[in-house]
Length: 104
Image (cartoon, rainbow, N blue to C red):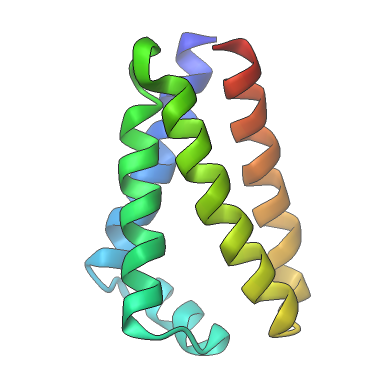
């Protein structure tokens, strides 16, 4: 499970960093969801920090909690914005994160 945790944590950290660096693909997503700059930064930091915390055994559960909180907030915005095509991948991220937390 260490490998799976590392892959998921690294992927989430990379996604958070991309949001913080305003990578074009994420900028389109942010505009579609009508997120403010502060909301984008908050989600980005949460994904980055949570993903990095998931890499180490002692902090894995804390990272899972951070990612689940951020993903839950993002999922709520996606559903409110009628961006249902984004909710399935977001739910997948949450499920994978829960599995990492359960194995920690």
